[in-house]
Length: 103
Image (tube, rainbow, N blue to C red; front, side, top):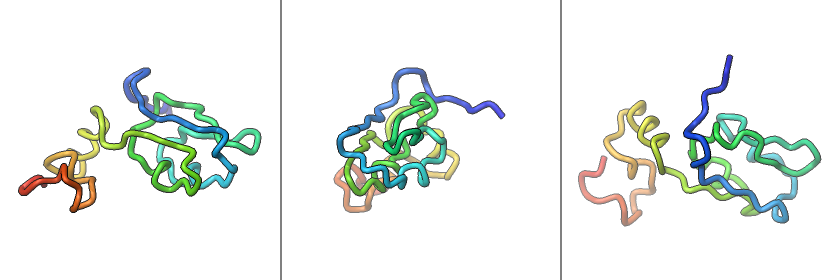
């Protein structure tokens, strides 16, 4: 099956290769197989398939990956699918962006 892509060239995903130790955790948590590890270090191989969920960043113990999670239309699609009323529903409840009645 063909992999659907996000919007071309808008994903905020970034990699700091010098911080990557090759642990592979990001490969395990990425739902879209955006990352690969061909030579012992992670590479971004399918950037436009990234839905900016933030799983790679949250699970990288070395801070090698950054992504602005909960941005763009991907967040809207995911939140709608999950029955959420707004993007802040994916933030911790003590986040200042999550006001009363947010969700």
